Amino acid sequence: MFDLNPVFIPGPTNIPDRLRRAMMVQTQDHRAPDFVETFAPVLEKTKKVFGTTTGEVITFPASGTGGWEAGICNTLSKGDKVLIARYGMFSHRWIDLCQRHGLDVHVIECAWGSGAPADKFAEILADDKAHDFKAVMVTHNETATGVKSDIAAVRTAMDASDHPALLMVDCVSSLASMPFEMDQWGVDIAVSGSQKGFMLATGMAILGVSQKALACMETADLPRTFFDFRDMMNANATGGFPYTPPLQLIYGMKESLEMLFEEGLENVYARHHRLAEGVRRAVAAWGMSLCAETPDLYSDTVSAIYVPEGFDSNLLTEHAFDNYNISFGIGLGEMNGKAFRIGHLGALTDVMVLSGIATIEMAMKDLNYPIELGSGVAAAQDYLRKTVYSAS
Ligand SMILES: *Cc1c(COP(=O)(O)O)cnc(C)c1O
Image (cartoon, rainbow, N blue to C red):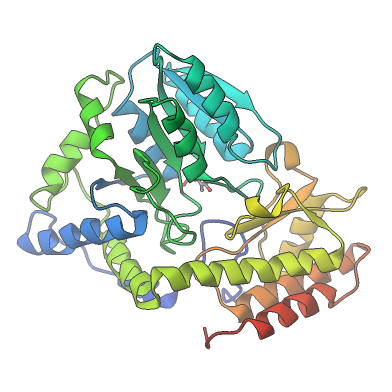
């Protein structure tokens, strides 16, 4: 019927009309001079979003998963030891990808709802006198559980033993929506994608890569062709591409950066925080709880919410879709059936968030959840009303 209802999944996110129009361009010859003029500034401006002046931005036609693969195959060799904690579906999938590439993956098992265990990383790295660990991998925002990890703390943990491992960070569901400081945090590989904070269609993996990570290409022996950093950088240096570029996404990216800078990155982060807090007030008013264990872990881009004992969260998300034509995130992995997720990431306003809260409330009431109709909406309204800063 209508396609005006926003999605409340934590990616792919709602695409503003301005970006849909920007992506609607006719085919162009990527070997013609005007492509150079389009692409080079996009790479340069994206650095600001990563918080890097010293690193490079490298993109591939892929989803975020391709970004993970590009990150490891350009910097690591078969059998290399890597350290990673599992605390949700995305850290789990990253572990799987590393294992399938023949890396020696040392996994720290953590409760889903907790974040990256900086203290455990510190202990393990301090014991690794031979510097066998070549990389530490951290999912900044675990989209399955709505948990944000402290990357600065992980850097401090690595520096405590002067450990030279690369720090690789998945920022797919945090970049361009929550603060990210690649240089300040000493991140060597940061992986993101077009379809979350950048509010675009899926199809561009976007990486920030440090000079230290680039130097690893000399010795890294994992096979790579499509995802070769060097091929991409050599072509990009003259504004070109080693194969056919995703032209429409590049135009979209150009416009997305304009939108983000017009609003101001600090304001983008503040908007996400405020809307997330509105959602959290609603959850509290329903008497329900978040998967994230403590407030310092709360994600500003997605909330994973436990349904009360005896209810099936899959029935709730199905009911909302079937009856109200609106999508919420399902519970992933071990949270399937136990939790649903409200994505509050990308192009969102007060009005949109309130409509989402109101609609999931109706769905919960339909299914006899022990909630009071309007309670979550009122709590969110109250918070948003008191913190309003401009017509957004
Ligand atoms: C969305 C997401 C990804 C990438 O998934 P793709 O479907 O490959 O784009 C990776 N990590 C996190 C944390 C994500 O939220």
